[in-house]
Length: 382
Image (cartoon, rainbow, N blue to C red; front, side, top):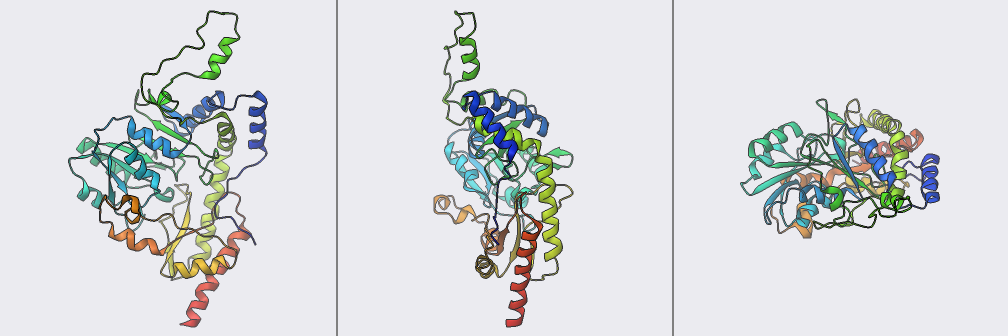
């Protein structure tokens, strides 16, 4: 049996949209991007949403909007993808790594408070796996200290925490639509906010400093008004090549229509995993999964036998992963010395199992059967 760890759920609707986009012969930043932004705004119930080419780009621009003074500090979880901290470096700021909460693996609020100094200007909060961090406490703390909050929502589609969508608790919400995510555009991201005017410069920042839609200009060019200055534009700020394109947006438009269905499948698979693995005393869940409330991008477990289990499952054709290596252990970030003792030790127990909307219950049963068999053999050998 060949099983995928992650897999985008792509079908006829996505292919149809791609074909239509190609037949229109406009593949770059165009009407599909605008429509996808509108659909995402409606999904998240936010005031502003701007599509970019990655979640990393969203994080970079999310910090850039505030024009923080060079050398200031940003509190970030050690347990995250490198983009979370790299976006800090892109802005000539310094990351301060925060240890993980033992239960959720999100940033630990008590450690956050200890590591805050007057040089800190922002906090980046990751909702690891899709489980919410203590975002209410973090936002209250940030407001008290008058610093900004950027939510890294790479693992969530905006599940509600205390009746407010994740991504709208802070000043900025950054989403990822990379191929492994809950919703995909192949590669892509979205930067969102409920603060009026906060994102007014993002459209220029994502497209080399130009706040103008070329596809609209091209339509004006063919109209009867030959005096229309369709070619005119101004560059008033430094921009980046971060725009989403219409091909990617065409995939997103199909994905968002079936998002509810894909989320329900993920929840059922996680519940199925939990029911099959709950009696194994040698493992515990990666995070406290609550599928009634939240959608998860990752399902995993913790065990003292992680490395042995990885090899055992690999020999059975079952892929596994580890999300992620704490950034305090990575050479690039070692000079930003922050003690994160809990996650640096606990990460050796963490294991990611297959999860995606196309995963079958037969495949999940096969995974669970082999995990159970592994631990049965371990007990016999003891």
